[in-house]
Image (tube, rainbow, N blue to C red; front, side, top):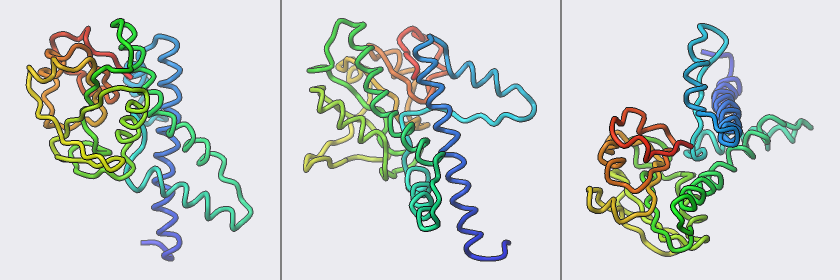
Length: 230
């Protein structure tokens, strides 16, 4: 219980903003680790062993849903009525919005390493919901990733057990059923949403190469060399 509805609402927006800002920090560190050749997931695991003063947040392909991409920006807009500039919120939003393009950059690098151009390559997006185990597409970074890939000439497909169909630019896309033979048709598979229903061992074993933006395939035993982390 709090003293007013205004305090309650600010508590809600603070919680959202706290996560948005901290995710932005780890997304920025992730992009830096990529340039330095360091596994950011191992870094986070190591830092998490500190018994106080550190709370783990994890990188990803971008923010989705109603809360994190939108509520902090509402607060930033509201702050202007009080002649106040919320610098952290704007910077976090800027960094988090860079992640879909960063994912496509990684896909491009992966395809180049296989002597393939992104133009004409078949790319499978695994998961289009904005978070795991839901059927919610609101503000999903997967949609932005698909848009960028298509703009670059890639043939884009997706698979999501919770979302059988999506519509983009008046074009309907149907979810691909995953099996070993189907996975072999794609030049690159990209784990965007870490649904528990995905069989990651099967995905890795039968894909040519996998970009894992969620560290979802961390428990895969065989063919780890096929997995590239964000």
